[in-house]
Image (cartoon, rainbow, N blue to C red; front, side):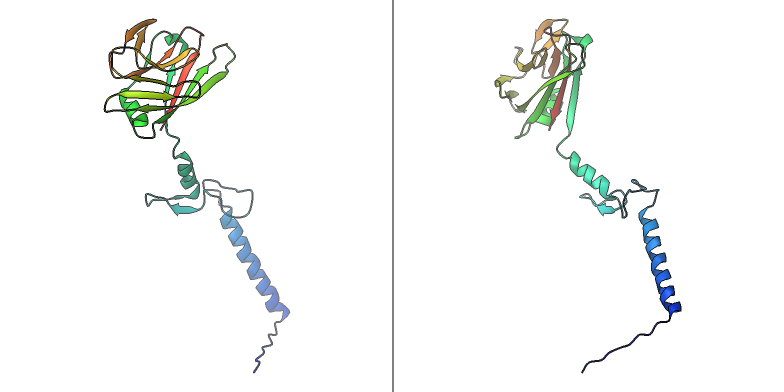
Length: 205
């Protein structure tokens, strides 16, 4: 058995239904274009990542954009050390606690060594390498495509972990161009005499 319905609608009701649909569509559009959100006035219809809220891994309600930013930041934490030009010949101290925190586990750390403005042009020259530190016996090893180096921290003798042009990452201590040896557990960043350069070291966990 087939049941059929016939709906008869006058022009008045048809126009009223269309008007209601238009009002609803405008309401949704206005809500999507809220200007007080983090990414207000989006260029296209809909909600931006700053207007959508989600629960992050800590159970907090945050915007989707914040959650994406946090995700993108994972694995990019770094410690920065700078040896300015006016410190040439003297080490800038890197505490052993930093080395242990960033490099003292099984996957070590990644080093980005930058020699900046050595020729007065504002250019940067850089190398990347891996560094491993054993907090138990203070043995360390540096791995790089050019060469590998190894040493022991606080053994009395200065050993350079990595040398890139005028910039040295070392376990020793220097003051006014004098080598004072490896007399403590800290490391150092040194701008040396090959070029008048600022040295920058980024340590990534």
